[in-house]
Length: 381
Picture (cartoon, rainbow, N blue to C red):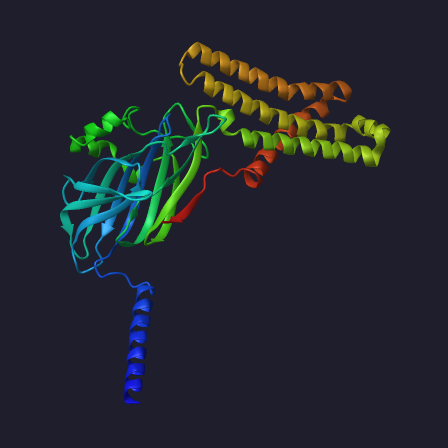
């Protein structure tokens, strides 16, 4: 009997110990030598082959008692690292080793100056991710950039990612802003920077990089931040889906209005309504505003494609003159038609109401329909 009781007690004790270890392992208690990232900054530049050159700055703070001597960073498996630098207290090029696992790369970085309790340090990485952006049938490059993961950091308070493209490309959802030399992100140039750290300080304002900027806050351990987007050499191809959607919506509205008027009014009554100057001014002004919007977008696309590789001042003035004449013609032709059918007062009212409709349509589109196809999400490895 005593043996059974002893066995039962041992079983309960072992079960309790196993349960306690399981609870501790899943209760969010982190190792005592863990630390946090106060902020991570990324400046990403895409080229015409879909490759991404990344400048990353990690601001690390030691919240533990043990000094931080090395980092374990998780990156895409095909990443090519040019160099890693520790900024504080001095600029020191760091040694690192890599280990390729199933679908990612583990980079073990040896710090030149250990980070003691309560201290901060900045670590800068320059690396390349080949073929990160994939080309689709329209020639657009679609990408999903993911920030690196520090496997021993328990928290990343802030992440800022600035996406950019080379000057000959359009970045969807943002105006491309290049604040570096055109060849600065070539592979050869990146290799040269590793040999001249003072040169590095002049160009690497990573925290203030422009372009498509996305931010995230309070990333837990093993979480990364993803930014998706598109870029292309052809502006029309890049926004083709939005153009087609706009045409379908506008065309559908016009068809529904005409169908409704014919159904409830009849052809004879519709003709009499159009003889009424008030209704004619409203209808013509709305259609004229839509025509001006479409023509403006078309001329913008033509102009950007035409002057991307040339800076001929005479050609630029000629194009501006043609643009102004075209817009004035589209603006005044409906007003002239109203003037011939009604009066000069109706024509002036048509021009003024066209401007009002133009503003209303653009504002409604920006509020209701315009959503840049640039998404961001948390991806957990």
